Length: 291
Image (cartoon, rainbow, N blue to C red; front, side, top):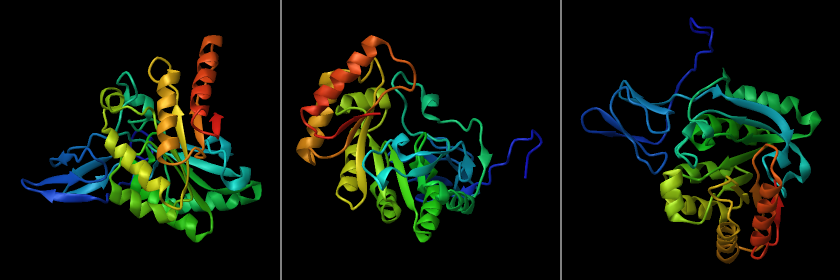
């Protein structure tokens, strides 16, 4: 079905993790923002909204990203023996990029199309002959696409295919724990080891992020940690060394760690900065990757 503009209509599904509040308001319990919504209001993430006394997911079957690529592009370096995955994502973001630009992390719908979880399973099945091992939920924050991701994960798990999640981890424990049995691997983005950085630049609580990381690392799921480098904000080698030191001392110096450079041509100075960051991480971690 299409609307009068020719843009695919988004079939909204009812959202999980909500509760009723006085005065016809609804509370969202998916992430630690705990938005309280009046009728007709959207949450901070722009994906969950209140209508007719129920909490709905505006992005339920809205697909903004769909591409088939090597698993190294997620990036994961030590999982699935170099297979390929169907990368997919929607809109929604419950944090901001340094500088305060939410749009950089895909907060708004933008271009896309409507799709169903069964379609994802069928596409993955058709790509098995080309090395597909499953789906990778990436782009923006896929945990805000929770209902669609959960349904896809359940279907793919039934088909003996893998589910990979790329997340920044600003989510409440219960939703994450309920998704865990269906996950095979996670790329966890840790932008810094600094509560002030997260509060001022990302606008989220650092303790909640660390709690999610702990849940994942202590589970059977394969976890690789990544720091997306944002020049001028978290490209200081000492800052990266602090992240690596935390991971090595708290968990293991064997945890895989990625430094993700921007997808553009870098200057000689920027390349040198990346290498200095890698050297700093390598003092505490044995498996450091440049992605």
